[in-house]
Image (tube, rainbow, N blue to C red; front, side):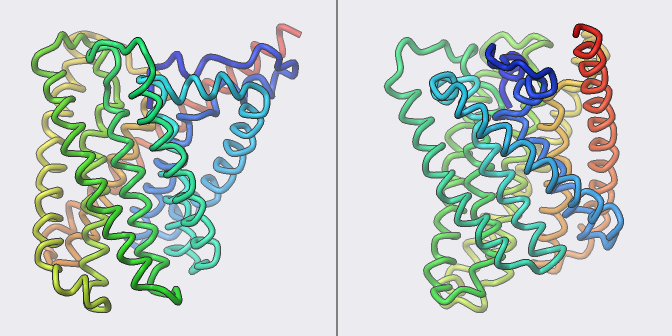
Length: 361
């Protein structure tokens, strides 16, 4: 998700206070809320807790609908402004939360209720959105001048290019087996899995270079950098899903060991990131005393935590590594606590903003 300023630019033409508030906070990066809510729900479902899974599913359906309506309204009201944001190095990657959020909701449809038709619709929609947004973003930042310096134009939100790509692969593995042309659909999932892996390798190299050879003050180390881990966690999940269904597809069975090895590589990478991210988080908030208060960026922290749990559970079951299951369960509860704290912060922010808007009338 981009820096905070991308969530504070409301269209000047909005007259209604509630509508104005909705448009300010909804588009595009707030689809990370859908990503985070959906994956925490799925992590709880994987651990057998239907209560939290179902409650978060309802929250996610409502949140997705509201954000979709607000996003469409903003496009209709200020299309040029939206296009400029997509072409922005900092704001542009956040549009890909729309793709990932759509896919996570689609996986919920299948996992919680076996609504495969609804999941298929979300998968098709996510593929269309992926093509429009990822190529629109890369084309725009390639041809737009002037370009920012690396330290001003790159943060963890760039790894949403991997998250969105792998999300399409994950949802695809859920719906492809029931399709008429299932071999073609599953081959597409394999392609998305490998493309997402390629994008991660390219972008994470730039991020590590930026971390180690450019100034990084506490304000720059926002929670978006937790996507460093979340991007490889969702890649692990996509790989585990491919391994799980490989026996039903001849072309996948032939490369199952390759996919399994690649999946282990990404699981190890995701695990490697966690201690470093915790150290940086503590340094930022304890040593540098940056206050821990609600910020939209924190949905980008919740999502990786939930995704690590879901990915670990899926990987452990696909490769029969039962000793990893307690880790998945522990991370499921950590992600739920993080979600509750972040949701409480959002609720307080919205209530405070609503009271101010009412008082100003």
